[in-house]
Image (cartoon, rainbow over all chains, first blue to last red; front, side, top):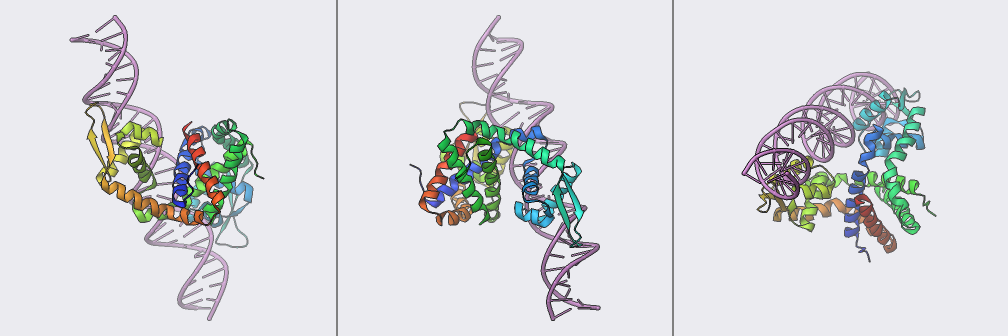
Length: 142
Length: 142
DNA sequence: GTATATAATTAGTTTGACTAACTAACCAAG
DNA sequence: CTTGGTTAGTTAGTCAAACTAATTATATAC
């Protein structure tokens, strides 16, 4: 039976997150696109175009970090920046068609490792992990 | 009802891991000890003294990376290195008392954010997350 | 108009990950 | 015993991602 005191759960979740991300690192090299880039791209694809600051906030990094990252994405043709007509200080960032394609391909490749492992699990465990993931996302945001 | 196809679960887990780690990053700055260092120290404390290569394997990084990290830990008095009498090529690494104390304090501080959030969850959800964490750790290793 | 806040960018710094190269030691085979 | 292959650890170099500080331009309030 798993311990359920908050500290222990927090500890295990923390370790699990670290290890999991390290485990899928391998496939990233194949895509030539890094996890933070794919993550930002993913937000643009699913939530649509937004300001750079909004994207940074969503990704929980500073504007400076996101400025660089978006510049890279733009340089790689995966995202585009355009002056925001509604606010001359800012820009609108959106994913390109290439970005969408790369995201899908890269995402599948990166997750293939996880997927293969998950596919071997009983359906109940997968369901459990799916539910846990949603809880974790809520935790991270709150 | 959560989707249970492997790709979707993999995707959500991946995002959740990224976000979770970012969310707890704040408290790390207070400790003056980084997550990778605490993670390695954690292994030493719980699994006991070991070779540098074993530690690297456990943490899923290269020996080169771990060599540097352990050197830092030693410099900070959190871990100690000793020639391994059983194998002249290698060293034994172990946590110091200071390391243990820092780990405990830092761990609590770092996890306090998660803990506070988790404490608000129903016990069943915490149990679910605890079980998920163990599954994730197994996934990362397999 | 002035003062304050916000958006984005750039420079600099640190950390952690990798690879490449190296030395030293270990082990098995001849 | 010697030799060849493997293993353990270290160092140098490179790159990405995170931060802070500083800057310029714009928006907002008074």
